Length: 296
Length: 222
Image 1 (cartoon, each protein chain N blue to C red):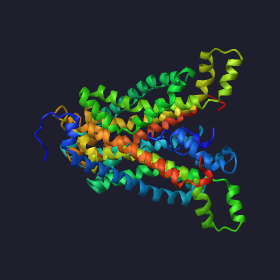
Image 2 (cartoon, each protein chain N blue to C red; image 1 turned 135 degrees about the vertical axis):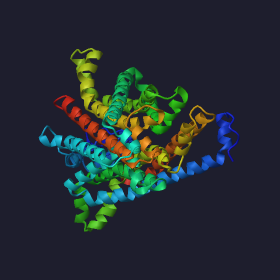
Image 3 (cartoon, rainbow over the protein chains, first blue to last red; image 1 turned 120 degrees about the vertical axis):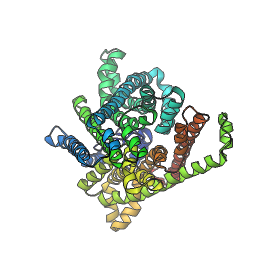
């Protein structure tokens, strides 16, 4: 796989250490491949910058600097806020219990919606990648592209207007928003599996199901995992919007902070959401590294 | 100018608020356009400064990546404290978010240029600046443009959230709909805002296709 086809769905926040240009898989591959192709093989010229763009990776202790820094910043901020002069309104909202509860709600929103997204998107992606469904793939990708241009806040509010407010509406909105990028990622991941390998699998007598399980899915795992990571981070971000429709989560601190004009509350909400997103992105990156099949 | 709050059909709603909607659509489009343009200038400059130094390039991409990972509502909230409400935090946030795809694609595009071509250009006596302007930038341009296109799509959605910090644009409709949840026209407002943004996003995307076709050097057109 050359640099340009690296998985980075356009609308999701992607990890800081992810290599390759950002772009829709198909157009990016087509466009980005062109300059390299003008002179030499794409792989040869693309490898050098890709390694250069990598942040320190692997299982060295340096990989743990980031999460430790994130947790330290969060802890220090909470210490600072709890010990600063707070009036009664701010103090009530910033009580450690309340903040912990909101953080937990936020994680719950993000994790539950991500799981639901995966349960829907991966089987659907697998189904759509079967040869009998191939004609439908461009259509689905086109719909996914159009769906991606729907603003998150619009989707969330529309669902709230239709279904009423609350945790589960927030989940439905998050899932509706996250399913398309994840589906696209699964499809792209399965599509870029070298067809000669699946042919070889069939040739040595594997059934179609076995080829899927032993050849296609393992080879698509890196792309699918990258998609899961993107989805998680996307969900952490979108979950902060869920507080507009009483979905709970750390967005509550932001809305309370803005409506009561308490800057410490607002800042705490913003900082904790930002740190949570960074932490989850790191976790996703580690998981992608550890779970990817060896040999890729 | 707001008519009596009877429940209107979607088309009636559109007709009754036509001027406001056109104005907000225009604001939305112009804010996104200006922010992406600013990000394009800044991002390409950053890319040009760092692409020959791998460490700096890695630093620039990971910094932009961190900003990018921060959810938009959080960044907008953080910007309220120094910048207040209104246009300023929205514009700063949009520009910051647009930077990552552009910076990353500029670096990848420029480093993806075949070194033998640069050598050949030097061999026929081109100077550093001429090589950059005549060889490297034109070859990297499609990748940079893809970055700008992705940035535009992102900025469209984030601009809607910017209405929460009183930013301009169609997000206003969505938040008014939210404020009147269950009331008359709340669906109409939200739908108008959401559909408006989708249409704008598709229009911008089409523009990028055309710009890409027109500005890609003939030799590397697909």
